[in-house]
Image 1 (cartoon, rainbow, N blue to C red):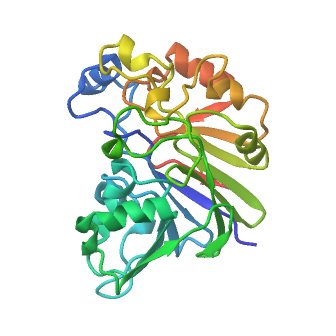
Image 2: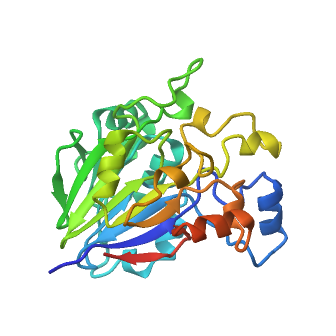
Length: 300
């Protein structure tokens, strides 16, 4: 029986870690070469059941670097070729779709997304470099499973918001729509749920997570006001569409007691749990959670 395998291509939130223009306390350690922190590229995961055909979950701006670092995703066979069969998108934020432009060399693959996500891509003419006669765009209905590369995949809503560059005024930050989704993947009796962005925990989301063997969940900020307190921004995590890790209504509490392997991903450069041995990292690990890093492999 084929088993699902996941490779973390990137584990950081938008901007990566360290962020190019940031000297927050955590980035300062990275710029200084502190061994307690490791550089991370922007969040994306590759999944496969046979090690031959691969599906990407989001295409980060760092995709070119990620492919160069991941042997199983490099070209093989003839003059042209790639093991990447599809890209499944959880939204249309820059750090979810910009990497598609790295895949523009007339290589056949398919892009799967909701009507909202594919509509945003269709409205931006730069994505026409992904020639329509070569790269298929597959519209996905929510909670309707489809199969790619031997993996059963289902998209579902997660509380969130529209992409930052489409905001006008004060957006709804925890609405459930096709603009922000999670991905459930099943193969060989294993079930992985990937939720890189969630502004809140709903009963429906909690029910879905209870069924999973592995959960890869939004770890953007440790505390909701983290960026405000360290002077690196003026928005809370929830204003950005991300529930914090800490707090009575944070994800650490919301995911407590689940039997699945729980891995935080999409971690902001300001998040102190990036520091090995920090009080925040120790709290997360003591509660049975892991902090994703680039190159991490998970077999179900």
